[in-house]
Every structure is written in C-alpha cells, then in structure tokens.
Length: 125
Image (cartoon, rainbow, N blue to C red; front, side):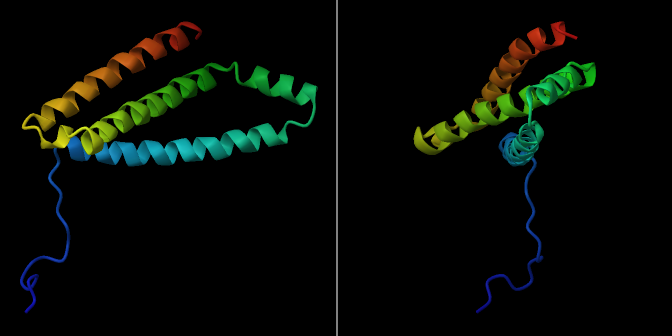
C-alpha cells in the first residue's frame, strides 16, 4: 500500500527561525569554502616579495575592506550558529519548549559578535 499516494511530490518547509538559520548556515559554509579556495589561489600566485607587497597594496582598497567585513559576517555567523547546532544536538536544547527562543538568543549573540568585530574594521576605512 502506497502511503504517499495522493500527496504532492514536493517537500514543503515551514519558514521558521530554525529553518532560516539552517539555510544561512549552509550558504555561509559554501561561501567560506569559496573564500578558502580563492585565498589559496591568490597566495599561490605570489612568487616573490615584490608580488606580495603589490598584492598587499591592492588589498588596502576600501572595496577589499568592505569584503573583509563581509567575510567577518559570514565567518562569525557560521561559527555562532555552529555552536547553536552543537547545543541543539548534544545538550538537549531541541527538547526544550523554548527552542525558538534559543534560536533568537543565538541571533542576538551573533549580532553582538559581528558588530564588535566589524566596528574596528570599519574604522580603518
């Protein structure tokens, strides 16, 4: 007997705080992998001290400073949400009735960590 007969063939997700955090965690993970490959490629192209000095001068551009803040955004979110996932999986945070409250607490912690790190970066613009 087919238990799925008559049901739609797509999966529908409810857009709640945990699902949005899950989506952002996947996206930030992919962005960090992309950054890692780009970073390694740039480092591998620098063959001498003059090339390194030239590359570092190019990185002083305000656009790269904003990209650095974006990297901090991605890395800090991924790290803070990773801690949330560990707590949910291993500390029983998912069993509590206030699971959505826990998600919001981590959003606030992420915002505080991001702003605390971004302010010094933005001061250098």
